[in-house]
Image (cartoon, rainbow, N blue to C red):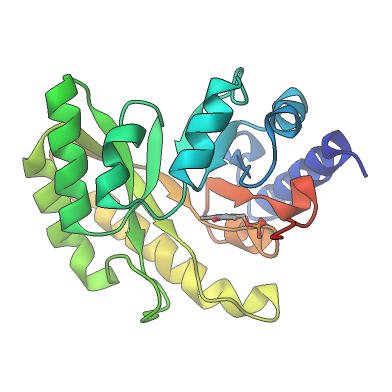
Length: 231
Ligand SMILES: *Cc1c(COP(=O)(O)O)cnc(C)c1O
């Protein structure tokens, strides 16, 4: 299967899941998770019509960006962002998905203010309460939104989650549904510099379930590019 065929397949599944849930397929953004795929493969995915490129590692993103990998599509940072790498990502990535602590938000805020820009971010929710993962607990989200509103230089555009690894896609349904509820509930309250626009969840194994549960941004790697070679 070519990248173009894979993108068409993923898009067809997204559209079907959206229609089945009574949603407009046009409102769902497909983020290609491009890690470990070189610039020419990323360009193939963009030509095939992915909406956005999502990169995980800062060094890899800078190298591929210099090669023109992301030309033609917006670039998002979807990985775990270390505070000492914030400078390299702010202003380059249109949206940072994994804002997972107040300390990171504050660092992003400081860098954005220094540059006179506003950086869009998503708050990452540790929806499975996994000790191995960072992120806010659901209960911490209202306070995090309040703090974020006060920081300046950042605009919170929604929530992101990576549920626990599981055997079958429906196992993540309760987590996806809890995320949807958080997204809706926290979107009702008005905060400065917050607009609950995006719910980023769902990967190759479970993006259709995520769409059924309200995701409007899915991050798909393997189903577009094939298995990654970690050697
Ligand atoms: C790699 C990655 C994805 C995509 O994973 P696949 O299972 O290959 O689709 C999505 N989100 C994040 C944060 C990732 O790191």
